[in-house]
Image (cartoon, rainbow over all chains, first blue to last red; front, side, top):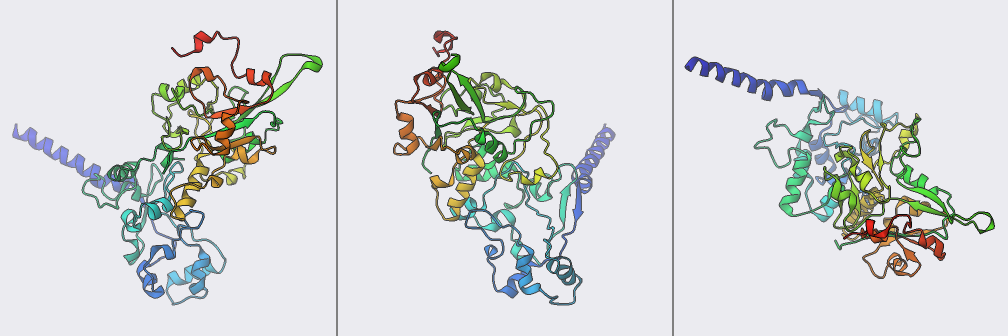
Length: 194
Length: 251
C-alpha cells in the first residue's frame, strides 16, 4: 500500500510541477522591448517622479499612454552617450520620426473600456496601485506574451496560482471586480465594456 | 452621479428618409458593410429607416419615414427577461438597455422577444474592404459571428463624455458632450436627445407634448424612444390594428 501511495505522490508532484512550472514556460513567450529604457535614470535626470509628466492625461479625458517619439527628441535629438540603446533610439526612431513599437504590458482586449481619468481623478487611485512601482525600476522587464490568447502576462499576473499575489499584480476582470466590490462601486456591464 | 434616463424624441414630420442616421450609426458602431449573402432579414441595421404609407393610392397617398432602433424599454424589458446569459441589462444609472455581445451565446431569444425587431444577429464574421478597417472606432469592439447586437445609444460616446468630465474632476457629464451619432448626423434636426429624467430638458418637454407617442405603448414596456407628428394617421401607426388588443396587453 505505501508503494501505491508513493507512486501517487510522485505522480501528483510531477503533474503539479508540470502545471505550475513547465507549462508557464511553454505558454509564455518572452520578447524584449525595442529600446532599453530606464525609468529611474529619466526620473533622476528630469527631476520628476510624477508619472503624469510623461504618461499624461489629455484634457478630453483620453490617456496618452507611452509618450511619442517627439517627446524623446527634446533630449535625444543626438545620441547622449555611446551605448547601443542610445544609438538605436536616435537612428531608428528619433531621426526618421518613427514611433517606437513598445510592447504594452497592460494592454487589454478590445472590448474592455478602462478610463484612466475616472480611476485617477475621481477615484484618486495612484498609478502604482495597478501598475506597480514602475517609476522606480532600473530597466524595463521583458514582455511576455501568452501564445494562446495573445495577451500580456501582466493580465493574469506572475503567479500561475494567483494566490498570495501583490495587489497590483493581475489585471483580469475578476481583479477589477474585486476592487469595485471592495469600494462599493457599481458600473454595469457597459461601464467597463465597449 | 445622478440617475439619468437617456431617451429621444424623433420628429417624423421632419424626417426626410435620407438615411444619414443609419450610415452614421454603422460608422460609429463598427457595423461592417453587408456580407455578400446578407438579405434584408440577415443584414445588420441597428438603426433603419422604415417607409410606411397610409395605404391610400393616388393623390390621397401619404408616406412617412420611421427611424427604428432599440426603443430602450424601461419596464418588463423583453430582451432582458429572456436572456439566459445576462448579456443585456437595463443600466441603473443611465436607463440604457445595454447589450454586451461578448457575453451573448447566440440563442436569439431576445430577437424573438423584442417587439420592435431592433436586434440583429451576426450571421458572418465582420469583414471590411482593405483599408477601411483603419477607420474603425477604437471605442467600440467589433462583434464576431454568432452573437446578437443592437443600438446601445452610442455608449462609446457616453464613455468619452464621462472621461472628459473626469479629467476636469467632474462626476456629471456635460449634456453637450454626449450626443449619439444618429442625432448628430440628422440634417433636419429631427432627433432630440437628452435626459428624460430631467423634467426641464428639451427632450422631456417634447416627450410630454400631445403630439408625442411611442410604438406599441400598450405593451407596457415604457420605451424611452418617443416619436412625434402633427398628422393623426401617423400617430395611429403606433398601435397595429391587426392584432386584438387583449392578446398583447399585459394582464
